[in-house]
Image 1: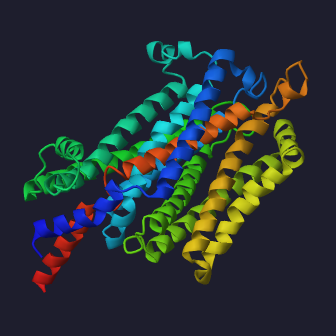
Image 2 (image 1 turned 30 degrees about the horizontal axis):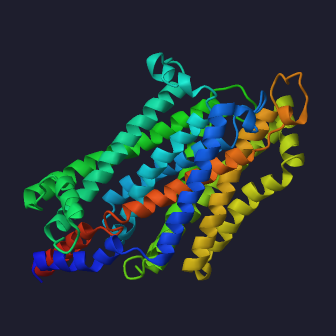
Image 3 (image 1 turned 120 degrees about the vertical axis):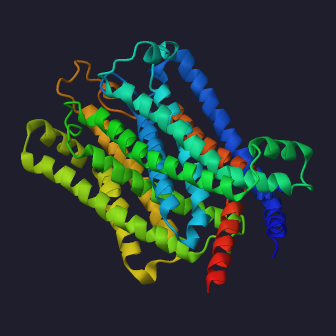
Length: 441
């Protein structure tokens, strides 16, 4: 089939996903917007009254916000790492998941840092972080790492979008005029010539290498914000690799969950197949084994050392947070391992269920890293009121947390209305490569 006719056929196939919005999608968008508006109200309330409307006090100065920040940033770094590696993997099935990974990466980097801003009591002084940065501070390096990674990931995402923008520009006669103008502007004159394809491939290859390096460095810096302090439970030499493995663990789980819903509701069974879930499930199994090993090493070394403050922290975990500890570090790790270890259990639904357990377990594990440690400081405060000693998130914090998740899903849905979630250019490249191999035979 002629190349241009094949492109036109692909545009015709994916156009309904771009132009038509199902009743279910509209309901989802309205619901997500409502959640975001509630979160906006909660933000205004917190901005006007301060942190008194949250559960954060003198002892526990960080709460759900910092946990969400770690989770989303960890998700973005894992997406950047996985997306960069996929660029070098020459398998036909990578095309179906590459764009999902790239979108998750950028959206997580946009949503995540917002939560760290919510931890700041005086947002009117935010500009001081940029005007008077302390180069010795890990927080300064974290800001630099996040901004650099966001710019790099955004450029990488845009580069992968360009060939599809060009296809849509050339074959969007039936689309609204405003869409045609957007595609023409975003395609930046790309004509899919051999020289342009080679230049774009070299550029994306270089960017993918940079993104992999940025992902490792940036998430290590985030881990050092904790491990370079003397707080019991944080002062650990393995926090950087532990955070990286945890990031890959959560990233693989969120990718699987996204694949399931995209496949189910967009009817993309032909493109997102069981082989994709099986491959992602095996990767999640490897990450769960490594994550379980790091978790065991971290808690075992504290227990075996018999240090006073470590013993006090473990006592807090095993008494006040016993069930949370069991859910995060046993159920959240062992159930995915059991499901994914046996080949017969690796169905699409069971792999998706394992990913949900992994996501919930990892978020709860981050909660146990942050809150119990802050509740057992070296020097306890004199005010021993329950709300000052122990942390309990308020509706304001939960509203903003759910608003962040809702914004992530809503933006994901809107991006899928701009460009197909399955790269058309990737399909063309696969067919072009297959034709080249057939001619050689």
